Length: 113
Length: 111
Image 1 (cartoon, rainbow over the protein chains, first blue to last red):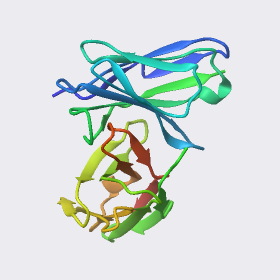
Image 2 (cartoon, rainbow over the protein chains, first blue to last red):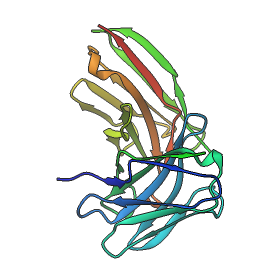
Image 3 (cartoon, each protein chain N blue to C red):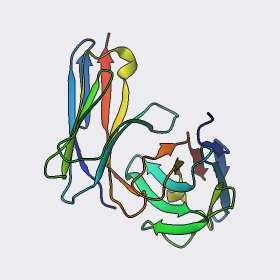
């Protein structure tokens, strides 16, 4: 069974640009979550989707947005990139809507110069 | 953002030794999870705990869900070199699947 797939694995962008990251969940999983991982802040929750609806949102500025499609695949977008947005962005999927373990992909490493 | 208090931050042990790490929170969680992350990869789920007082094993790993629902610990017995990595605890409540993570324990094993 394929795991969570994230593309691309690595990305280099310039300040002010925007970026879109993609995530394909485990087959049958309808919940998708996004996390930002940095050495200073650790793993921080960005947002969570279930059946194309955003259910929870973390404490990030409006430049961070996401969406989920009818096939459960998800994308997140960061506009007007800042140097501090450099991080590993992790996508996770889970089978159920609530209280279900998350299974993570290997992430997209974003570097903003 | 809120994080769980995970300790120790790092451990350097001899192969064959047992390891213990723990996580505490000021808030109650309904589920505790433990993950391991290797360099360049995402966290991998090791153990999920759903009930206060629950003790669960996965091979050489044993984890417990604290009675107060505000803490959890993970033990690794007879450590081996492939145990090297960063271990994270995470708490989860019923409203969705959002996880609150600890700061991680970096484990290094000397052969």
